[in-house]
Length: 479
Image (tube, rainbow, N blue to C red; front, top):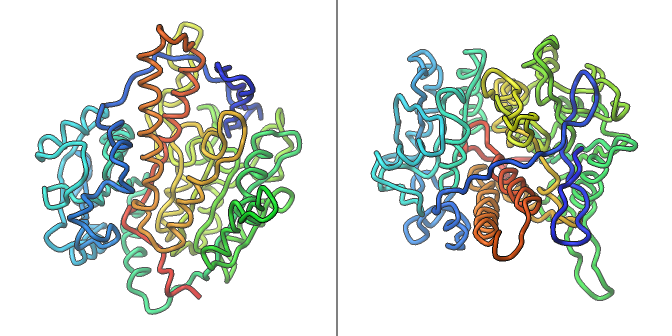
């Protein structure tokens, strides 16, 4: 974990990042100050609107209704006719549901957030509340590698739209995903149970996993009691509120075998939250790409102990076991759980240049394999994940954003709509960062404070949906 950069607020202590180097077993290197760029003004304005989602409220009564909100697919420039043919079952399903508000966008290439703005301009819309009838539907599925359409492009669109991504390193993944989503949505019987899972290792001596377990996992599982006698509970247990059974594996029970069980048993979960370290591997480690973003389980011996197959859950495990993951939505809080950039956002070399990680940005293979095996969607993190997602700068729990996303998913909201709170948080933090930069000289805000705000902003921004953003649990049909 990394030492939090000091801020001007006394008592702010430590910022924890959930990532481990596979070879050394050491925590990922500290955050180093960087040149901070400001977001487009429309990102900050998103917070000023106060809307719960980006759709024009007086035009669309139900953001979950595709006939009103629309659905579109954005094909990257390198996507072949073969890939499009393999996606045909899903495309036909969405066209039937969205009707006139179904759109296909061909041959898109975008490597920066500015490209997303240019793309919107070409379609005569901008970063503002979405009117699906203006030409760009609310739900957008990007079918492209990060080389064709970058994560930055996806982040920017997701400010107002509900955006997901499909990219497979193995071509048949597109066919399998499309067929299994349609099968899930049309089958007479749902094969998953009305069960949600929480999986959170707590490694002895490791503060990051202890913080997640104690400040996020246990409060979700057990609730948070009243602060004073006579008051209402701060939070009720997640299962009680959502009417889902809970399978909880925290601390000593968060073993690799128990994670497998949650995914593969006859009463396997329909929704799974995992909170763990994610792994990073150097190029000289075998199966590097299969293991980047793999989840570190309770078997890990702690800082300085190299990672191994016995203490991690990776794409290779799914390839070996080939479980039926149909109907699963997985929320994975871990470094690189959705993807890894070529250049480290948060760490600089001694000469000031960004630390080189990979030759190209990648979509992590663990979620790729999950989607191929039937998962509806994976919500994960590109680059490193920080404790700001569930605690404030004073190390006090603030679980409401992540909990709110989970409750929306468990109530049957489409995942792109359910996760919009992260875009609102990004917008708010973008405004705070912008104000701090403008006031730096007059108010005495130092570089460490700016860096802290920068990390918070980028962490909120870097959550992405892998899979169709319009998928949702068939809550009424779960038994």
